[in-house]
Image (cartoon, rainbow, N blue to C red; front, side, top):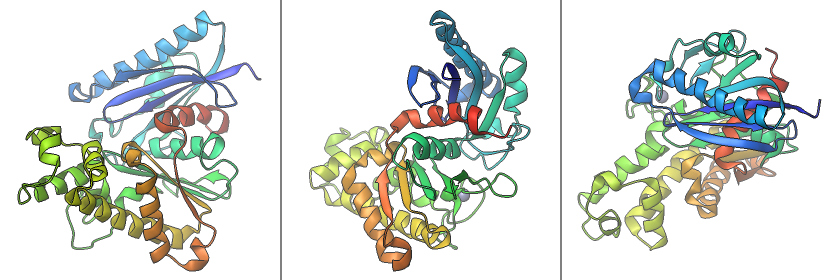
Length: 323
Ligand SMILES: [Zn+2]
């Protein structure tokens, strides 16, 4: 079976990342396509098809046997049917779409679908930062905050595939309204858009921040990358925003740690590029807040597979999913 490679597709709010992956997690080919989410559901599906076709073209050229296609998608995914059933606030166009049904007839391979953060957790636990651990909490910090959990060595889905929606833990019961319809979800306080929004608010009454210069006065240029850059230049406004996000993340992770007592917490996604200092600060907050018995041996680490984790995890679905 060593030649039975699989195709992994990571459907995101902006891009579709994809690749051909070996059973040992080696990437033989990878690519990125714009998801073109503004053009709607059919455009997204056409791009997913294109990603599969490109991967198959590579496999044919290299004489590689493909045995399955795995897709990681936002939302709660019914593993049996392949339908996106709920919690899809950052890609609402795909709610109700049956990805298995839409992709299977076009390609002569079994198709497996799971939640994007779940497949990232699967990849990190099999080949990345959580390799060798049986109880793992995995978070992706980006446009949204996704979560995946490995419990006793198995990916946890919950009773209706809606488990581990980490970004939608309530951390302020009277707080901000979330895109999911809830109130005070973690995602409203520590995701990339939340950090950018808070920075914009503070910039209005702080003319001395170096951020004004970094974005050349254009607030549309403000990203979390700029905020981390400013902090490196000892900008106190940037530090305040980052420390506040770390405190919210620490509070959310501490609650999850008290609940499931993992060995390791893996933090990935675009915002995790804030570097080791960012991860250490989150760890400090978690250790300050959670039970000492739960944090004694706990490690908080940065994801190792970076942007590839999603499609690697999706590719692994083909060998580990029950179908
Ligand atoms: Zn929410």
